Image: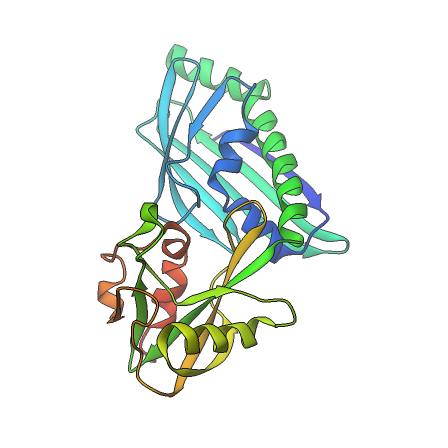
Length: 274
């Protein structure tokens, strides 16, 4: 089974590099000019997302199987090869983060198999990996100084609090975790407390971060913290509705893209203790 490996040091902490990797549009932009087209299907990579693309006349799809703070993994679906797996793992290192990429594939045999091995073997896959890691390094630099939008994963009795957006028009009706921008002079936890008071009329006690940083616009990222209610009952003061969501209901809710990327971490957060 042929395999390619490449390792690169990116001068940014793992949390920042992981956020850059989750920028789906970055992947599409990085391969332009290489004869490869990628349709990311949305702004943020998340487990279960499917990317479509082509190399010349050959089309296929990639199913994202992992997209979190440790890296990204994907496998080929509806493509010309029996198997193709792409794995990116992140590890802290002196001076930044080691980005370890690997591509492993199974050839179908015959002329098509020899063509696939020749295309990958002469470096197209390696060129794509190098182009992507250069783009990730550049995006990591932007995210290192990005403004933070905090979210609150408020949990009570095994349920997660969600709120429905009423504006702007392009996201109206979608669901998200409560939160907002960190204001000058605030730290993340202070912003979580203030936003929950303003949007829900409650007091919360923030805890650990939930899931990875999520890239938003060029100069913003989302960072979510677990929060426990200490006073009050949540009310929809700034949005049309709020609701408590069970673990079984998480996947069926119409989450906004950034919040959907956090679903694996939210499932883990609501996992009953053993």
